[in-house]
Each structure stands twice: as C-alpha cells, then as structure tokens.
Picture 1 (tube, rainbow, N blue to C red):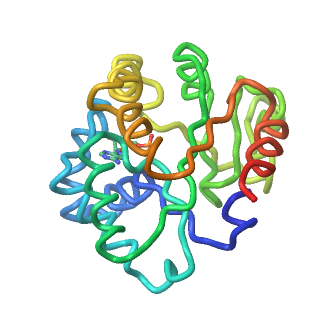
Picture 2 (tube, rainbow, N blue to C red):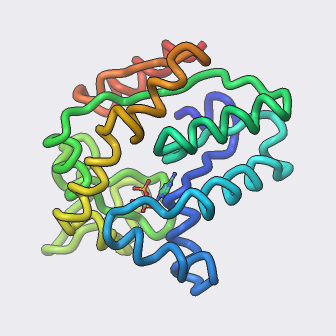
Length: 206
Ligand code: AMP
C-alpha cells in the first residue's frame, strides 16, 4: 500500500539477506547463521549495506525501509547518515502487536515465490492461501510455490527475534523511541484486519 501510494521502492533488509543466501554470495554466507538463530546480522555488515542501498538511483524520490533500523545503533547511524545527506525522514511507522499474536502470525506466514508482497497466512482469514486437494496456492496469483522460512518455524529463533524487537533499551523499540522526537512517528494497532490496518495507516500518512 505504501509503495503504491508514494511510488517508492520497498527495501527489506530480510529480503536482501535471503536473496544473498539463495545466490550463495559472500554476504549471504556471513548472514546465514545469524538469521537461522534469530539473531541480528552484525551492524558492521547491515548498516553499510543499507546506507549504500539508499544511494541507488531508484531511491532519489524516497523509499520505504522495512526491517531497518532494528536496534538503537542502526537508528543512530541512519539518522546521522540522513542528516549528513540533508534528507528528512517523513515518517516512522510502528505497527503495534502483542508478542503472542506476532508469533502466531510469523508461524502462519507463507511466502509466494512469484512476489514477496503477495501476503498469505494460514492463521489470518483475510489472507488465507487457497487450498485445493490438500495443497496450498497463493491467494493473489494462484502460484503453487508457497514456502515457509526456516526461521519462522523455529520457536527459539522467533523468541530471540522478539527479545530484540521488544527491547526498549537497545532493541527495535529503543529505535522507535529514538525517533519519537526526531520524526513524525505513526503508531498503528496491528490487531484489526489487514484492510482496517491498511486504511488506518493510509489515512495517517497524508
Ligand atoms: P525479517 O525478514 O525482517 O524477519 O528478517 C529476517 C532476519 O534477517 C532477521 O531475523 C535478522 O537475522 C536479519 N535482519 C533483518 N533485518 C536486519 C537488521 N536491520 N539488522 C540485522 N539483521 C537483520
């Protein structure tokens, strides 16, 4: 929705890492073990990778960063780099969700090989994949290539990710708080339906 509304690239750190793992690159090799364990890939790798990505030509008119910054150090590095480049951050979006529900949604997620932005989740009625003869198909494009991420099915890895996310001292919520008096932060309740959350968010990003 945001990508379409503002016509900006959707840059997801997790997707960049997974593509590198799939393509057996050096970056992928370095990142894989951290991702499998649910730990953050070290800042020395992640921060320069994302800051470099933001200088590419498709980012000239803006971008949507998803999955970055994930800790306080990344938030500070991003903030400093933007200040240096004279770029203003328009919004910081926080989708607020209780930890147990977030865990269930992670475990129910099914990834479409055709398009990473085709949402499918076996636990969310509005975006359930289509089931035919015991097989699941993407609800958006009908592809039979739905998969799960190994780190989405490993409860210890999910708990680790959530320990980092909900950490208000140095983790993701610390990054959110860091931006509270530096950018316009928009917090949206993630509990309602996909349509309601999208509509609420869209109305708050004007
Ligand atoms: P995600 O697709 O956002 O769930 O990210 C999957 C995994 O990629 C995370 O559990 C981390 O191991 C790694 N990752 C994604 N974003 C970051 C980040 N900003 N900093 C460090 N590691 C990250």
